[in-house]
Length: 148
Image (cartoon, rainbow, N blue to C red; front, side, top):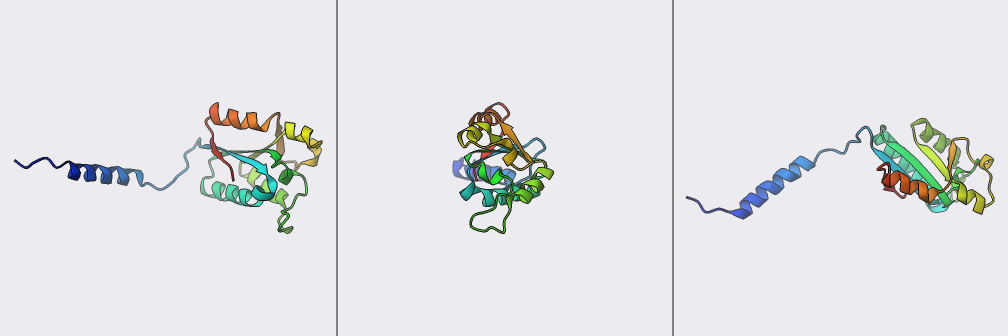
């Protein structure tokens, strides 16, 4: 009778587990993600590109963008990238909305910055508190969290 070799068994099990988990990434119907924007200057252009890539790769994902603090500024009607003024955010946002992404602006931020709802792109909606909304999406509705 051959002696038991735990190392061989461990390698065999590890190889089997790795093979079983090495499946291609695929979004499942019902996947949900919240994107948190709090600085338009550093997040807007790259974040919108990331959102576009996400929707191109996993179009059935439900995505909610929550903007608060300085992160609301890219949602102002006519807003452009400060470093590259050829990039206007409105058309990029409209394209993402047509793919099912929703954009929510924090009303506490509006009050703090003395801004009005009519200053924002038509595609924007509003939430009383951006931080509370992110928490609700994560904990109550089981959204994944991304901060671009």
